[in-house]
Each structure stands twice: as structure tokens, then as C-alpha cells.
Image (cartoon, rainbow over all chains, first blue to last red; front, side, top):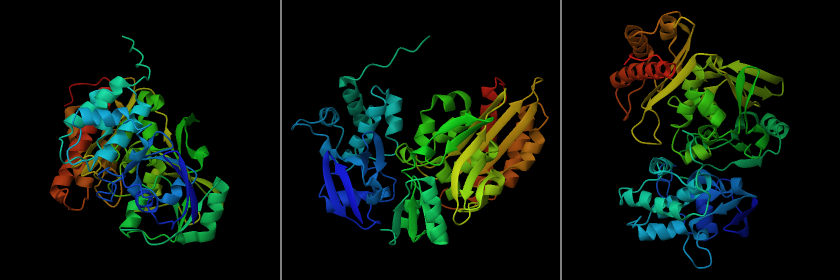
Length: 163
Length: 293
């Protein structure tokens, strides 16, 4: 079945079997191996990509044909003009990774979070990342990294809460 | 593992989805969020020959109050409830539930109606739908019908949706004055199925007696289960610690769980009672009734 998917701003047309999972389409048909496959059963979150700009999805639990006509952002799409995305820079600065296996999923889940909530507090960050497993860091530095990236955003600060 | 091969159709309208479902009958499954169906297909627990994808039906992504009901469309995702001001202000039972389904990424795809149609014994929405006395609107060749949740949940992974039919929306009655609910769940880790769960929805009358009670438990039988005996005990009574304990004991007696690596039968039966008590205390607490711990 022929599909057209825009990945990181570039349009790809490919012929795929309907049962091809998006993660494998990205890795094997497009060669974008930044998206990892971990548990392969929707539990670990290393395969998270962003659909249509702001929706985090586990790409092991979505068929590539479902992305036909849609836009996907993968970890490869975060760098702009050779410069790391603020989230990537923050993970670097805060040591938000050790082995790095979960990092693409952590980055993409955080990316979608900041699209919806540019200034999440610490509990909101921990909650948003609850579907992403990391076996190295203990999460502390990942949370710090997302806090740093959020602090650097140009998005308007939240409205003061009426008291 | 990859799913078995299947034929994929993307419906451009409700009518087209219905035509495809009518054409393929029992070979076809509806694909909405896919967060239960796709894993089931990967484990080869489900092998539909045809998938009818309704993700493009944006006219089924809605939450609206009409005729004393909150209608939630078949393409409304869990995350939409989680971030809805209407839900957090008026439907605390639904807010509780939407915050604990699977994990936050899964909730950005998974749908409320899809979860009801999947009817997993440990699913969350069936429990809440029973406590809230929800209805599901189902459309097929023969027209549109409304099915009470008690008649909708037939057996594990089986509902009243017949071959060729599409569940269009779920309707939750808008809570009358002095009504609150709560959903309680224990799980081994975020994203796991419930070890046990319970939902309570309580309406108080002007004298502080219970005018309406909805009590249900999850992961305690072939599908979400209404605790009829607890509802009978609660209706018309004044909320007390003893009453809540009796309702919890009714849940323990009703629960018929299966032992697995989440816990033994004894443990899960006890948790059904514990969670019904917690749900009642939380719901009544939201109505300003304290001291029931």
C-alpha cells in the first residue's frame, strides 16, 4: 500500500504492508534509526515520536499506514541548522542520560509536553514522563533537563493564578 | 512480533465506515486509538482480516453536554478529558479515570469508546461507566440504538456491538446537584493493567442521605462488575463508617478475580473492598462529608 508521510519536514513516499509498524518503517524503510525499539509492546516509551506537531505516540503501537498524509517528528528532526534543540542541549548539560537508549523517547515525549505546557512544574514533568522508562539515571537529571529547557523557552509564562 | 497480515481501509465518513463494516462483517475490526487492538494483534491474540481506521473521523472527536448527558465521541482521546476544564469542573469521576488509564503517552492516542469496546476485564472505563450509569450509542445498517452499559458489557472482550456496527459515542448522565464520584486503582507500575479498581458515584439528598449510588469494580471478573448489593445498602441511608464498611464487604463478596502475577484471588478480593471504601470516602469527601476514613 502506497503512503506519503512527511518526516522531519521531508516528504517520503513508500510502499508498505499495512502491518508495518511505524517504528520499523522509520528505522528500516527510511533509515532513521534515532527512534529506538525497546519493549516493543507499548510499555517502555523509547520509540516515542511526535505526530502532527504535538502528539506523542509510541511508534511500536501505530501502523505506518495510519501516518499516511501526516507529519512525524523524530529525534533526528530536533536539530535545527546544526544546533541542538534546547531540550537536547539541556539533556547534555544536566547529564540527562547515561547509556542513551531511552533518550530519543524521553526527548520526544518532553517535546510534546512543552508544546502543550511550556512551563510545567516538576510533578507535571514527572507525570508526563511516566510512560518512558530509564534504567540508568534514576530520572532526576532527566527531570532537571526538561526544567532547564522549559526555563529557556520563549513561550509566554503561565497566567498568574487568581488568589 | 508483527501482526498477521490484514487489509487496511481508512474511512472518510461514518457512512463509509459503516459500509466497510457491513461489507466485511466478522472479519473486520474498528481501529481507533489502537492502544489495545494493536498490542493484541502483535501477540496474535487478535487476527482481524480487515481494519477500518476511523482516526480520520474528526467529527467523532467531541465532548458535549446535551439532554442531561455528556456525550463523548468515538474519536475522543483520553488526553482530551485529562485537559478539559469541563471534565475537571463537573465530572470528577471521569477526571479521576482519565488520569490513570495506561500511561500519559498511551492516553494521547487511546479513546474512551475504544476502551469500552475492547472490554478488557482489567480496563478502567467500564468500571466508571457502570458507576455513572453510562449509555453507548451504536449505529448499524438497521439504524441507531442506545445501549445501557450493563447490557453493553457482555463478556471479556465482547460487547453488544454486533457485526457491521460502529459505537459512535458514550453518554454519561450529567451529575445532578450534590453528586460526586471517585475512581480508585492500584497497579504495579504506571501503564500496567489494574490489579484492582473501583468506582463510586454518590448523590446526596437535602437531608444528607444517599439518594443515588453507583458502585462498580474492575479486574474482578470477566468484565467490569456492578456491586448491586453495595448500591442497595447505600441507597436511602446516611453515610457512616459502618455503612461504607458494609458496602466494601459487599464488593469483596461480589469480586470474582483470577489469580495472576499481580496477586492472588484473596488479595484481589480484599482490594476490591479496600478500593470501594476509598472511592466512597473520596466521593463523599468531595461533597463535604468528612470523618468517614
